Length: 372
Image 1 (tube, rainbow, N blue to C red):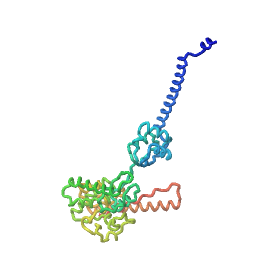
Image 2 (cartoon, rainbow, N blue to C red; image 1 turned 180 degrees about the horizontal axis):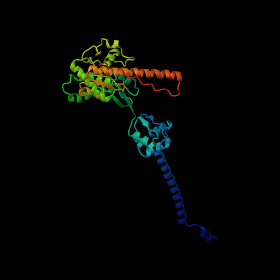
Image 3 (tube, rainbow, N blue to C red; image 1 turned 135 degrees about the horizontal axis):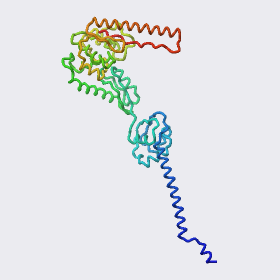
Image 4 (tube, helix red, strand yellow; image 1 turned 90 degrees about the vertical axis):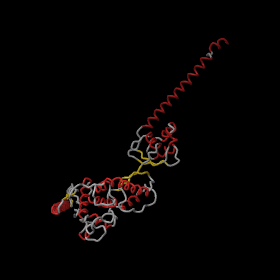
């Protein structure tokens, strides 16, 4: 009996080997599961995200990785807060999270978003002050921009700002933006003034800014600016009045914007310090904030004997040396202006009578000619 029981007992070494193999199989299975989970998590972390369009999000100061993950998931920017959180700790990126306002591109992966956050690639805003705007108009746009910080700014002197497009982060100080624009113009003048053409009838940088502001308002065609500047330079040399409509308008609206009607003959007779139909030489100050090209054009105008220009119906101007040629150009312009008005009137009458399915194209009005 005892001998038989001993023969049936499994040897101790074999039993230990069996337990060891079972443990190893379980460990292998766990490793395979962990590897699969890691592979799946990595795929999801680097996969395209759910955003169909770009979206701005904010990481508040003091947020940890889990809080950021929950916020991104709640806004539909990522699919899994858990994967984002685990990845943040595995990569040690949780230590480098930076507060700020960020832009999540359409389809951004969690990996891309984490890279944006840890590198502090904050979302930047854009604000454009167009060439030819008055200081009043520029300040109204700056004060109305809610992304800027600081108190509302006062209107600086006319013509002291250099128009440009500015990029900034939320909270950038409004006054600092004004100061940057002022400095940019001073730097530009310091660069261009020593390179000016010889024998210009302009004695100071301020006079250059005044004339550049008139050039800026007279034409929106960049290639024409040196020609327009040359006409005014030639007139100044000869002691002729500049006769620029924009100076008349500035005297009427006092720099607060545009005239909401056509300039009249009565306007041309108004006695204001800026009416260059009534005064000789330059007005007492700029009528707008000129851009780089207009300032450069005044300091290095085209070489020409032209004294007149008038709108040509294409958005540009026809230039001439003599009054006779100018009057002929004006006559052509008047005829074109009349024809455009008649065509517009006929189109309106036709539309009212027939009510076509496709509306006729009505020519846009062309600006009034400069009376030079």
